[in-house]
Length: 330
Ligand code: AFP
Image 1: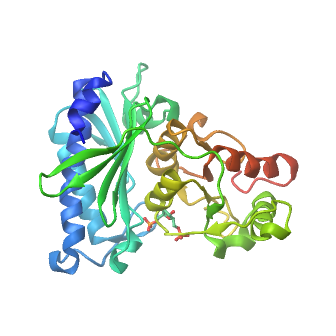
Image 2: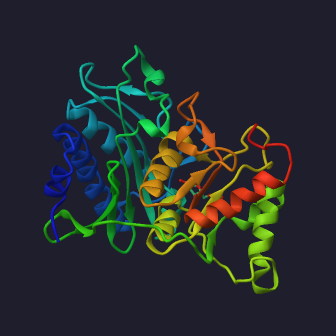
Image 3: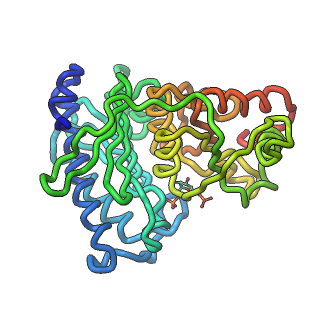
């Protein structure tokens, strides 16, 4: 097993980028500690506040957001941060090169049931053209220079890409370091497992309804094989399972609320996870276009997500190509 810094150095990753990633990891170690303390740390439960997305904030959402934001800005290496829990971007050093978008605690409704949650981050560079505030972050996923997530599960893991494949690290609590445990993470092309919130089935567009129907039909249907289903309700742990043993993860657009057809956020969830999935040989799409090619129009934008094993995603997308219907995500 190797340490994080030598591994990154060997990939010719700029030193300042390594420092930004290491700062995120220092914050993650503290979040991991507090999560493992559970009720003992007094940070479980909700606040009376809602975030900009209208979602109830957990106390640990706030703590994690504050921790990551403050630590990143203190490095002086970060020009601005954008967080799922902040209304607006927060400016840092005007001369710094990096922009960090993050979801401090993804799947936070799992905290109170002692189940897995995660931190997701996406690192961009200041654009070459003049841009201020939110505009800084309106870059396609292809512009990301690094993306990763920390999964707080039975063990705390970092999964990271700097555009040269995907590596996984496990936090060794005895030495307080993330140690390399998987050198080249790749997603098998085929799968027999899917992850989707089935309770939304009646609200999906026709292509997703038809695709899932065929998976459920198993050996008796046109797919002629049985599929297993898993749903942890935290994107980090659901996508981590897909990366670990294959699968397809989807949170498609639905018609529950016409003002909010999609749940997952482009900048904080979909883009970084798509970068990781593509670097691991998988595929990520909205159903109609590649997620990382989308031009964001606002920082808290939401998007339809279908990602995972390449062949299975292609099969799912074939339903979107062949079944005509109105797009629910506009
Ligand atoms: P929270 O962070 O509000 O718990 O939401 C988690 C999430 O954005 C994503 O991580 C999950 O995949 C998805 O929502 C779960 O959604 P359901 O509540 O529909 O299961």
